Image (cartoon, protein in one colour):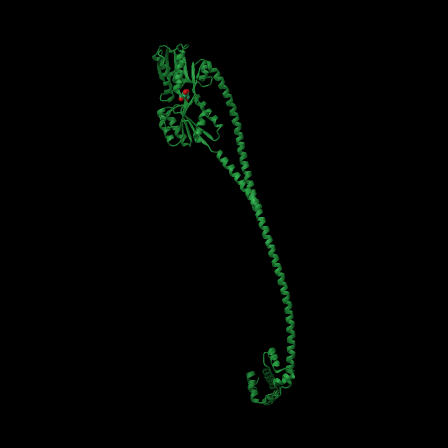
Amino acid sequence: MHNNFIFERAILIFAVILLTVTSCADAKKNYIIAVSQCSEDSWRQKLKQELEMATFFNEGVELRFASANDDSHIQKRQIDSLLSSGADLLIVSPNQTDLLSDEIDKAYEAGIPVILFDRKTDSRKYTAFMGADNCQIGNMLGLFIADKLQGKGKIVEIIGLRGSSPAAERHEGFVSAISRFPGLEIVRCEYGDWTEESGETAMKQILSGYDGEVDAVFGGNDRMALGARRAMMQAGRDISNTLFVGVDALPEPDGGMGLVADSTLSASAIYPTHGDELMILALDILRGRDYPKETLLQSSIVTPENASILLLQHEEVIRQAGYLKTMNAQAGKMRDSLKLQQIILGLVLLFLAIFVFLLSFYARAYQQKKLLNAKLQYEMETVARQRDELEMERDKLIELSGDCQEESDHLSRRDSEFMQKFYSVLDKHLDNPDISVEDISAELCMSRAHLYRKVKSVTGLSPVEIIRRTRLEKADKLLSETGLNISEIAYRVGFSSASYFSKCYRDYFNRLPTDKK
Ligand code: FRU
């Protein structure tokens, strides 16, 4: 009963250990999320930081980044190596639509969830898309310019990288807005590659063949608008009344928002990064939850009127993010110490379980030993009892054998006395050839039969035989001691015939009385 209780406890402890170990193993379940960026710039950095920050709330997520520096071929190779390193999900901003479609399709077909972020491919083979509505952004900025120019003016457009989806969509949205105003004209249009330098080069190119008015410049992003502005200044153009509009509005002093705040740019559109939402989407996919196939992120226009306040708000966000980082670092330390405590607890439980098991085995062994001892004790007592009984038996036997000895001594004494009497009677009548057994028995005061039984039992011979043997023994003695002849000797020992004596003598001694001894 007691042992069972201990066993139950031990099993319970093992179950707890098992649970602890399993829960630890579960907590260790990692997701590797690969992020393939087409470029390396402030906007991409912001996205990266937001994604990293999102891992603070999602333990067990590992991010692996690669940036292709605006080169589609490099990006292809990077996607390959990210996937072969064991990524569970791919987030990708494809540098150019057509050049990267095949690579991304391959990943998707291999069963790896693919999230297209910000830029698209020309294929439907992706798990989800998240990004702003670039067409709407282009349209919104077109309307802003139309409004500022009151529907009349000359516009230059610097489009983003040829073949990249935001470039095409922003252009499309912008053209569609401008086309609604007959007084507005896009006088020149040139491609850049999203960099400031490319904006400058494109504008230089335009100005080399165009010397007319430029009332507004629409850059596919802020950096290209800034480059175009510098090119105009370098060309000696009066830009005091020219609108410079771009996209991104990064909330930094030298980002789009800062440039609008200090009136370098006339407006920008927030091109949201929202790394936190991107992480939620990725984890929903990985954890098999419901998720939207297309997520359009909201954009809004930044003008000199709201730029400063937006910057201030962003500073506040940065400050909060700082706290968050500190808190995460502390939480990290606490997680580490918790892990250590879990390990220690696991070990303690393990030792405890081993101890309880050993204790239960010891208790069982002790119980069995006690049982065996009791059994042994009982058997020893039985053996001792049997030994005492045997000793008693032995003593009785010894006593009995003493009695028997005494009895036999007594008997043999009586026998020899009887035989002496028998021989003395015989001796007396030895020379009488007619002496009979009856005569002797009468002399010994016993019946003939009694005498016969007695003599036979003591000597093994009948009285007749004894009488004859005694006569012959005496005769032999006389033969050797006297000079008497055979007839005389035969007569002396009770034989009436010498020849009969000789026959008996020879039968008994195996020789004749005449033979020398
Ligand atoms: C950043 C960037 C942004 C632009 C976006 C388009 O790499 O060039 O400036 O808005 O990509 O995908």
